[in-house]
Image 1 (cartoon, rainbow, N blue to C red):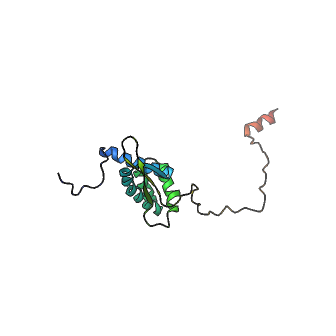
Image 2 (spheres, rainbow, N blue to C red):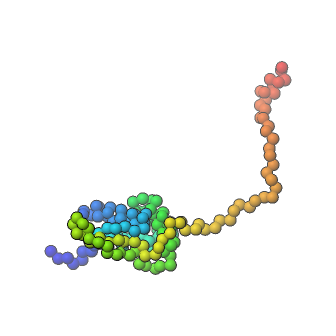
Image 3 (tube, rainbow, N blue to C red):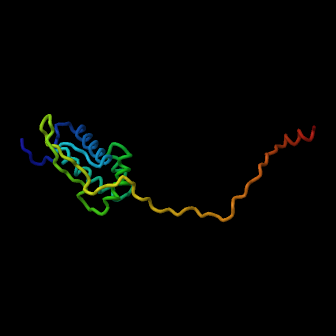
Length: 160
């Protein structure tokens, strides 16, 4: 059998399991900032997440919905769009870095650390400034506590 035209690694998994694995790795990378995994898995998740970051930088509703479809949770998608993408706005591509770390003890698999190239802060990006509501100089007038009198209550008072 020939290998022409086949792209990507199978990672010894079925298609749905492989897609779930990549989604999970991408989400953990968004949450923690860096993760350690095998070199092959890191090389698979890098282009997947870089495409999501490029979509997140637009900040549009359509881009946000596409990112939600590609990640497991809405919270991680919102974190990517609201916190991470604005910090990477000065970079046009190459958001992630893969560094080989060590060989795993059990099976001697090559491990790698995948992380963001720029140092990310945990603080959310500043929200756009919204002007406060105008404050009037006159203090609010206190209303007197008036009891609503019904016509039947007036009749009772008049008959007594």
